[in-house]
Length: 228
Image 1 (cartoon, rainbow, N blue to C red):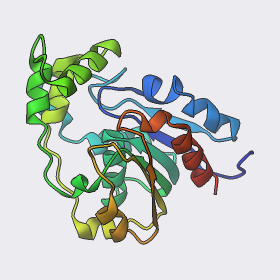
Image 2 (image 1 turned 45 degrees about the vertical axis):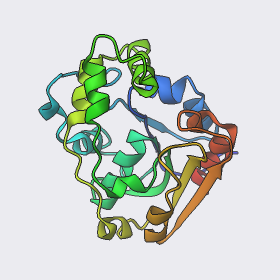
Image 3 (image 1 turned 90 degrees about the vertical axis):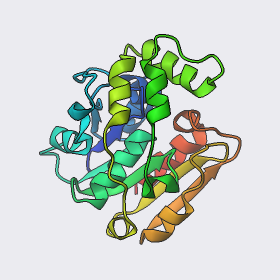
C-alpha cells in the first residue's frame, strides 16, 4: 500500500544500537520505503557513526542533537525503541520537534520519574563485566558487537535526563501507539497513556524488551498505525 502525501518517518534506535542495526538490518527501513515513505535515520550521540566521547557533558542535550538532525523536515511521523522512544516523547512534550504520529516501543511509566543508570554505566566501564550480572553482560556484548565503545555508552547513560512531568505529557497532541512486551521490565505504560489525549497501548504476549522491535505483531501494528 502506497501512502500519498504522508510525511517522512523518523526512526530512533535504542541504547547500544544504531540506525543500521536497529532499523535497516531488521527490515523496518525497507518496509516503510515499500509503502512510499521517506525514512529519516539518526545515530544517537555515542552510537553508530555519531561522535563518541567518554565525557558525560558531551551528551547533555541529546534531544537537541536529534532535533538539529531533523531540522528542515517539517512535521514527521516517528518510531522509537527504548532510549529512542523516550527521546521522541521528550521532544514531542517539550516542543523540540513536531510529529503527526508516534510509535513508542519498549518504554513504560518510568519515563515520568528519575532514571538512574549508574550501575549499568559502571558495568560498561569495566573491561570485563560481572559474570553474575546478565543484563550488564548483554549490554557489554551488544556494544562491542555493534562497534560501539562501552566508555562512550557509559557516558551517554551518565548524562542528566530531566524527567517528564504529567503536564508536559498532557501537552502531546498527536496520536501515540505504545508497543510493549508483557515480559518487558519497563512495564505497561498505563499512566503515560492515560495522560495523552489520543493513545493506544498494545501488549505483546510472550515478548520481552529486546524482542519487541522485531516482533511481527509490533511491526505490523506500527506500519498500520503510521499509514493512517
